Each structure stands twice: as C-alpha cells, then as structure tokens.
Image 1 (cartoon, rainbow, N blue to C red):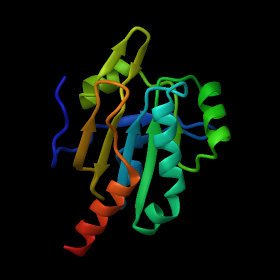
Image 2 (cartoon, rainbow, N blue to C red):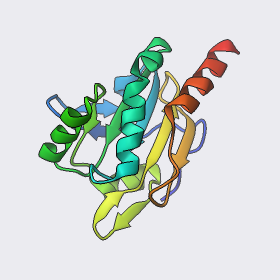
Image 3 (cartoon, one colour):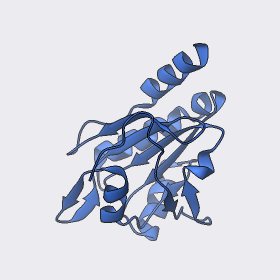
Image 4 (cartoon, rainbow, N blue to C red):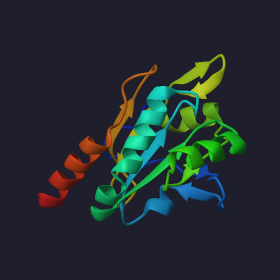
Length: 157
C-alpha cells in the first residue's frame, strides 16, 4: 500500500452510483477538477457532515468547474437512503471493495467491521492528484471551503 502523491495519476476505480450506471474514475471527471471522497459509512456523523458540507457548496463548486464523487462500502439500499435523506446531488457510490480501493490508493482500512477510513483527493482536469488527505480514523478530512480556495488559487496563477 502506497499513498498517492501530487502529480500521480489517480488509479482507475469503477464506481457504482445509486440509481445509475457504473463509471470509471478518473475518466468520468476529465476536463474538470475532481473531488473524490471515500467515507466510512452512513453511520458516521463526521462523514455525513462532510457530505452535507459538499452538497451545501455545490453551486460554488460547480461554478469553478469542480465535480464531486463519494464512495463507501455501504450497500445500495443504505447508500440510497443516505442520498435521499441528505439530498445529495453528486454521485455517491456503494459496495466498494475496501481492500482493492486501499491497494490502489493507499487509503486506510478499518478491519472489524471492514470499511474505508475517510480519504479525499483533489484531481486536476487530466486526472492527476493535486492533493491527497488520508485519515486513519474518524477525524481529519477534506473540506469544501479548502477545495474552493485551492482551485481559485490554481485558476488565478
């Protein structure tokens, strides 16, 4: 397991979103800045707060050409309930294989029960990692205001 550093190409991951056809990262984000969020599960209050924060900032993120995708090991019904309850407008994937995702990205995995720890990536329009944020536990995660400020800075350079 090795972490993804700035400049690394984000690995191909297939995401099965609620109510939609599977798609591959990073290709589905091509041409836009991308935010990829792995969250622990719908039971995690910190994860829900993060997902809701990204939803609240959706217009600002979209206005800067930023697309958001989230992913967890939760099953489809649980994920569909999370999306509906919190009115999430970005794709939220379910059924992730924690070990395969961790092997590809370096994300930390909780072993019992097995789930991905909070991990976030900001990708450039070509699918390369600009920022990676790895957490080994409940706290420490990517925030939408930080992403907005960072992308604004990159666009102004």
